[in-house]
Amino acid sequence: MTADISLRPVHHPAVKSGNIGVLLVNLGTPDGTDYTSMRRYLREFLTDRRVIEWSRWKWYPILFGIVLNTRPQKVGKAYELIWNKEKNESFLRTYTRNQSELMAERLKDLDNVKVDWAMRYGTPSIGSRIEVLKQEGCDRIVLFPLYPQYAAATTATVNDKAFHKLLSMRWQPALRTVPDYHDDETYIDALARSVETHLSSLDWKPDMLIASFHGIPMSYFKQGDPYYCQCQKTGRLLRERLGLKQENFMVTFQSRFGPEEWLQPYTDKTVEKLACDGVKRVAVINPGFVSDCLETLEEIAEQAAHSFHENGGEKFAHIPCLNDSEDGMKVLEKVVRRELQGWA
Ligand SMILES: C=CC1=C(C)c2cc3[nH]c(cc4nc(cc5[nH]c(cc1n2)c(C)c5CCC(=O)O)C(CCC(=O)O)=C4C)c(C)c3C=C
Ligand SMILES: [Fe+2]
Ligand SMILES: [Fe+2]
Image 1 (cartoon, rainbow, N blue to C red):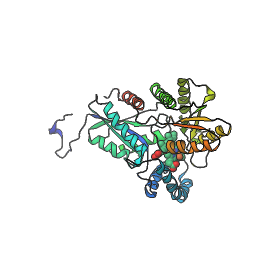
Image 2 (image 1 turned 30 degrees about the vertical axis):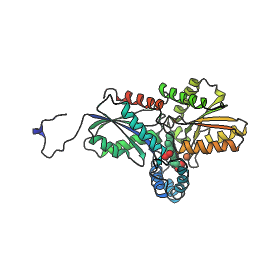
Image 3 (image 1 turned 90 degrees about the vertical axis):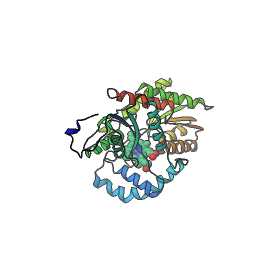
């Protein structure tokens, strides 16, 4: 953009403009599995009012008195089991970075688009990457919270954080937030193809396919969060696309935290019950997770598999998340191109 220099105060800094940023944002992950890294990460996560909606006077004594003294060690050990040793980072970070690099490749035809990635908790922070995009001349940014289903605890908190960064900026970029895509045809098709590919590599067929989503407290649902309904719809569309009967497919909710009631049925209890009821072969997919992480690799592929076998189950398969696969990238690209319309 050119401006009449004579109208500009001499000390006005040159500001690049005319580019468009695409910022992929995932939940976040600790920088290491040690106590300090784990505590820092959990502290940022669990002080977020969108995540824990309890009043602060009730929550903080529990958080600072108990949770942050015990959970970092416990969860650090779980992270160690699923750590990407080659890169010395969690797979969530590896996949998110790969998705950003692959997205940049796929959008090469749009020469003024810059792609970057950030984490809601931990590093790189959303604010620091908005800053970098702005310095690279992005006066418009598409902010993409990487969650197919909307929840206030995930999507809204990413948006909050980005707008909070804008509060401190003189020349704010225009910000477009990407909505959920829980019923998008390309997404459902990618999930279905992933199930088909994975199951065709096994010498057995599951009696039950479980679509396990991260849970939220029941009280959030009752206050109007659309998450539960969107998970149910994703599940139904996936079942229909796979041509499965209702009795061979279930939607469940995992990763409960704290004493409250969460969305039901719970994944862990369901897996245990299925095994006790004599169901011998089970497969689990995690459609709500764009990338494999602690909750899929440890809680499902390790813990749920173990509990299924302990209770008499014979075959258990965990279907990987879409991650940086060709089909997974097709979904993300479709959503991004749709949101770039009118800009790029
Ligand atoms: C009340 C607490 C939590 C809510 C609500 C919640 C919602 C929620 N979370 C995800 C996705 C992920 N959560 C992950 C880890 C994780 N989640 C919570 C708590 C709540 N999540 C905690 C405390 C943790 C950390 C691990 C632990 O201490 O158990 C992850 C994995 C991150 C990683 O590094 O691997 C993801 C992904 C969604 C989608 C969601 C609501 C819809
Ligand atoms: Fe979570
Ligand atoms: Fe968990």
